[in-house]
Length: 566
Image (cartoon, rainbow, N blue to C red; front, side):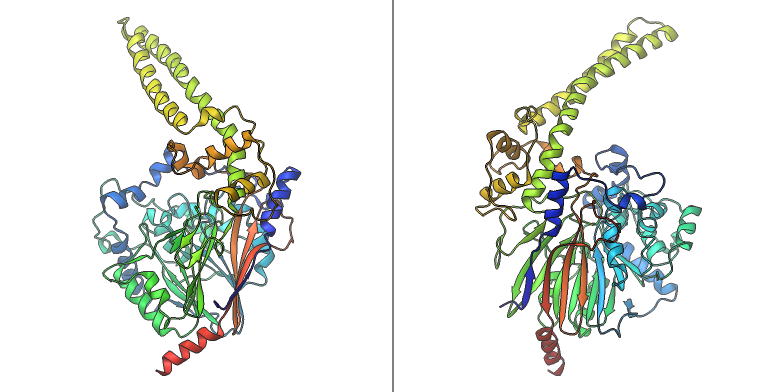
């Protein structure tokens, strides 16, 4: 027996399917958008990738984040913030309700669709925690108005945050200013060797100060980038895993100590999930042999759940530990592009089986969404690859003639034209090779008319399971070819497009598959609810409950008391 009860109403899944069948009307979030709706955020463009280069730099040339975090904590102590970073405003409550939402900060429609369901639970909630990546693409201090203050202007309760890897790309200066209320230290306090090509933080302008000064009432500064929320019946232990998923030695010692000293059932909140996409990632603590998960699974610490962001969907893995289980949850679907769930293979992680695993969107719905989006987008990409060489050739000839008119030497047009023509031809050959390796020529002529029920049936066949939600339906040869391309089998050669499906085919039109968690705790139980945000909800509609799990806290509390007496 695990002691946990769960249910899967699948309201979000059914609402998304109905929206697709009805033509996916616009939801009430349109009323919340600023006068100029935000442009869709896209990762597949050179400026965004270049701005976010610190990710690659940290992984290749050395990660300075651990040392920077230690400097930030020293600077907080210099500012008079001594003692443990604890938020105790809710410590005396018999009941606590909060929202946990991950990877929010794209600032476009995919973030704004979460606003109406968040507002529907606002009055019942005590606070919100953003679990990883508050701001994309670089955590810039000047992006908070559009991607933090504006979307959550109606949330007049405290909002706390955990830094994600993107928040560290500006050395955490935006996060510390807006969420912790602290000015950056002088450079003399910051003698850290930065690796080559590291992107320095962007200078702050007057707009950042104005945005922070105008924040809604009820907001309070959090004490540090990692902290504990004493939430009455439970405690939320929030850690900062930086860019590469490492907890520095100072934070690691603090994490181990509070895990032992706080004698309440606990939930870990982290920027990097410990179980994700069917893979175990236990987490590194600098200078220690034990991992983050070793601390979580220690029965004397009383953890009942570990929730992480970073991956933009919902996943849940109930892991048995003795006579109960710990819920490992991925909750990064709060606004960024959706990471495909149909790429998650059959789950077999020791005691966690496919039958116990849950995700949102369901694999079949993920497959349907990307199949419906892929064919028209891929056609445009192939057309662009075919036309671009000739466009550049014409431009090269024009430039060549202009140079010839200015400087003479009749060979200029051909030299320039040859250079401009050869490069795009080479690139086009590479692109076509990858498209061909992906099997795209065979699907470009398909209609893309696939239903979620067909995708669910086909995914069930791949996983040797019955389809979820809907009964099996017939799948035609054309639909099967399309799904085989979108969800390739492992033994077949695939091109580069399959590695970046989620980023390339980012969707900003309802129905969407965003979600957040609602945590409701009293003395005896903790309920974790996955609330879906589809984008077609009307103002005042209750959140769509995709699933919930209820954890019995009595045996955990009893075990903690026994440990204290011993």
